[in-house]
Image 1 (tube, rainbow, N blue to C red):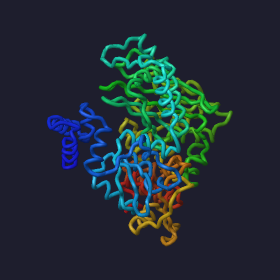
Image 2: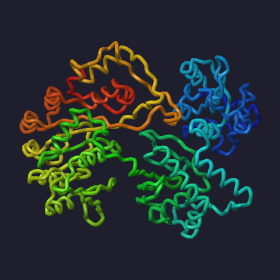
Image 3: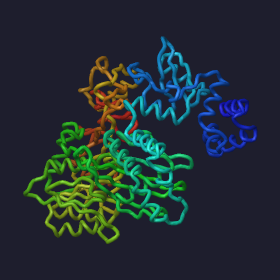
Image 4: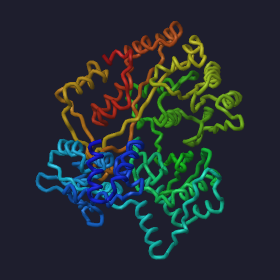
Length: 594
């Protein structure tokens, strides 16, 4: 509250707002849980620039903007190594220049003393704050860390220049009505086909593919729009389309996805394909209505970027051997578990690609079919016409299959049909949503599978997560502290093969041009692979889902957990301790965890 009152008093003293407006803005900030300055702008009492100028004058802090060239940061100073892009975006700060032991930093909240203290400790420089607006800082971050003006920004700037020069009229790209009624079809079509909107959508797609983006998030709020790219599992803000063109952009995406452009009350899902950089790109589009418009999420399925090579999946040699041994079985169940987006489908397809031969009949049922592979008979779930996982499986059993891939087991009927297929001489691979591999047993028993049948049919239970891989060009070595090093060696379950603590070096992200200043470049899977050996079969038969007994046998047999697999990647310098700890948990019955 002190920071809000300080800024509030400054704006009143500078005659930017009145006392009554201050009181209203304070109430709005408390209700909406936003910053006081944002509340002032939202209520229309002042704009960002006037607030920043008032702060500059009253606090004696220099004002930085793109107009006075201070926010045009000069390259080659090494500033990106001092403050990373992720930190700049999160805290709305931007390093400007370094003068001896003083670092100049543009800040949206120059009165935030705690942020200045944190910067001082993190950078080891004295901090000279400059006040700047949030929107201008975000644009400057894009320009500085992205190595130049983004394709999206160039497209928007070009559109603005055409409008200003008379090359286009303001009403050519109309903001479509956002009432609950169905939209006017002619209005929606007109906006969606406008050349500026088409160019903007193309720019977003091109930039997303160039930045190795997996998902595009496009959102509307009361006063602004938001565009974010998910890169290596983390969302990064990018320059968003102007508010006036937002609904026209959504309509354009609906047309491409063959959706109803006049319907904005109900969720819609669709797909479309484009060709970029001479390779086909599939996009899966999900549109959901919100109170301020529609939220669009596009999943990018880049066929050219998917390499179904089992040697590049992240398996340790013993894990790969166990998985392929189970996949070579003439019949049985193989389950791979993990959250949505953890790469389960890619791993299973890499396994199928390894064991695929013309002498065998492979059939898959998926929702949706994300990877198309020659030599496989792939079926898309269509629940609206009765083609469910279970219905397709029943049909598969009359198609003389050798290997069946089921995209996901979601219900009792699908689970039991998978079991029947395994018991009648077929190899069945599928996925489940459980926290770890051994919980597969508990989940299947909960779905109605009898333990005595499961014990004789389950060949392998596995789990996987994705961790970001350090950029090899800029990763920074450091000597881990005692507790961190002890944890890594203990939980890696290496036993007698554990490295000499004095020789262990860990790495942390730094950021460079090659990794877009993130410090990471790509992701790799970590696994736990539990081959169901006779001793485990006996436990399942006698005790059902006794996870403690199963894990004890697994680790005694040389198998290890997700956490152990992750620590092994840390010890060889592939990823960071923070990444592993963020995606894994300790197993309650893991002997290697105590």
